[in-house]
Length: 126
Image: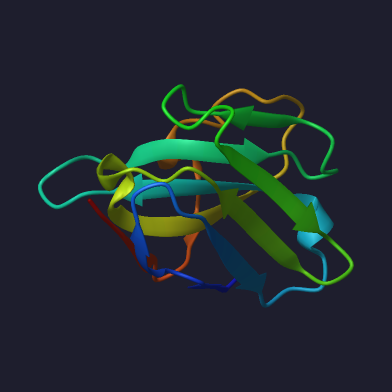
């Protein structure tokens, strides 16, 4: 599946952004989806994930309660609403997909995802 992320930009400390990821396949419901982020010189960090049906979500500790992941399988889209952004949230954000499995095992591990978008840059100014 090909993924295209959008919605990044420059925002002030405390502001909000909504990222979107468009998928090429019409069977997005067969994929678990996630958002990861990466700062220069650092490893890719898990932000949020949602299982194929949209009912099970999980979040990284640093974004829990601030970010909300959602998906629309009918429209083949994945979103990430980010609120109360801080300068430490500055990173390139990537959407990712993997074929759905029998459990949530590995949802937070970027090595378990096989399809990646090109990323969208989020910069939070202080």
